[in-house]
Length: 514
Ligand code: BG6
Image (tube, rainbow, N blue to C red; front, side):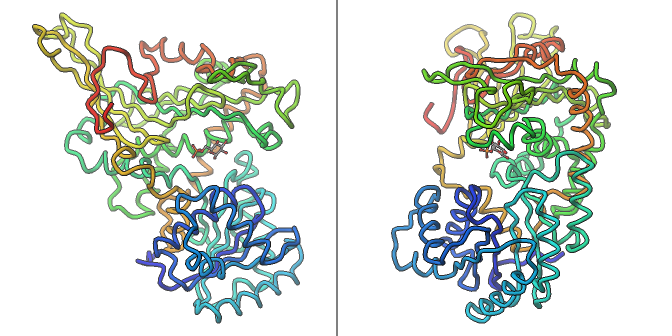
């Protein structure tokens, strides 16, 4: 596949679900940032589509509000704003009405002519998964795929509810689009530091040689959130943390850490390596194994930063006896030569004390019979990749305590990327929309990855269906069920503090001025 070097050709972007939350918070702000940075050129149009009646003026007014509230750039240059907004049209649409799609095709031809666009089409489906199939069919039957340029579809998660439903979805979509025209979004893959994992691994002489079971004791991936389910109770109560975060973001990050070096830095080669990791994940063999190796939690009442918070079951649109998990932690094994014997611990949850995403690589300790290790309780070396909201990396090393005879002290040496360049790095959605329009699907998930991830997750979900008794409750604002501590303790490990909340005796050397 050819990746276009720029977007000079131009395209029409169709946002299905244009009056929804994702469009408002992420997609419109991303388009504005791309425009501000000259990455959209002037040959583009955006058509907002939803059921609701709206005029172009109302749509553009909503667009403005969304940019003011959520975009990292200000919309204070009136001339630039007007030029940008002129590219936006709104059309109310019933997705089963093929006639209406024909109308959309006619509008598209007009927009091609007006903005000098060569027939390229990017369909962004910010919709419930049950609509992916019907929209694809209507696009085809309404003649939207007959223009002379390329046609690509971007699909939001969740991609199905389990392997079976995902397979059905995929069967429908692939009746209309080829795999290389399908861009399945996992916005974590658009994050700066997730993409940086490859550079850290493959561009540093002192990491890659150690990146295996001879030197790494364990890997920990934490995705903690302070938010509850907010107004998404209806969706979340059916999904839960395992499907909402585990099947996608967490397993995707794990593949980036665990994959073999690809033969080339090309999308297909990278995705080939990632899917091999997913295939190597050791499946849980029984419900007992799931009970021992996967912790399932749900928040109850508690407090966070001095604020009293309701329990999950008291949230809007959540069943009062719901057994949906808002937290899970798991121990995974990657059964291949590189990783045999190295546990991967992952955890995610809502209403935890901090919002943070971090990957900790814990290296094996020095042998106890030599030199300093004999006399001191040496801490292991760590490499910590800080993904979100702070971006950067730090390594933990042991050094002599200044002024003290042969005394050893841990030192964290940090490159805080977000401190250095501010928080103004491109948002994940900017990067991904730009990639899709350039035809670069590296950071989108391929069908075999999605299927493999569901297969793994389905076993956990099946065991939980059989046994709701193991649901652990944790107070909102805590670090989750105690059982998650035991998961590591039984292997002689502990969760390392995240978000820079290190133990007292650590010296920080950081460009953040810590
Ligand atoms: C989404 C989940 O995919 O990711 C949400 O559906 C979650 O439940 C969100 O809050 C977290 O993303 P980020 O980028 O804020 O860490």
